[in-house]
Image (cartoon, rainbow, N blue to C red; front, side, top):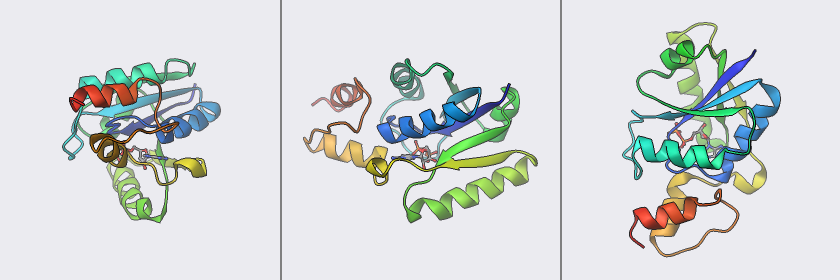
Length: 159
Ligand code: ADP
């Protein structure tokens, strides 16, 4: 049984994340979408809210589970017996950051590797922060968010 984790902030989850998740779920037996509590970023949604929104969004993907975690990602991976972690690689701007994270995680836990998937071109420039900015300024986003996420954003932003 090959389990991998897909860690991230998911503030909130977008269709770009879902695209990566579906690709990983076709390759591995189980994918744990892992919502990070300590992200170093200030988040709009609390970790419990992000976890709940993710759970709704992945309901129809059979071998995907959602869990929140705190602390080092490699420790969480060990706890759930994951053999690797999944990350998404978008445009060149992701590369340096993702490479440094992957190398640090391999240093912290050898034989634990990072596997990258690329999204469909429709999601190449999609980010949670861009979504939050557009919605907060009154825009509406079609086809870029799982059902219910836009509504959750409006509610949170009192729009
Ligand atoms: P983090 O704070 O850990 O970067 P994010 O939720 O921003 O958390 O992203 C989690 C992972 O998903 C990262 O590997 C990121 O590159 C990837 N990702 C985010 N948006 C997209 C997207 N539109 N397409 C593909 N991958 C994405």
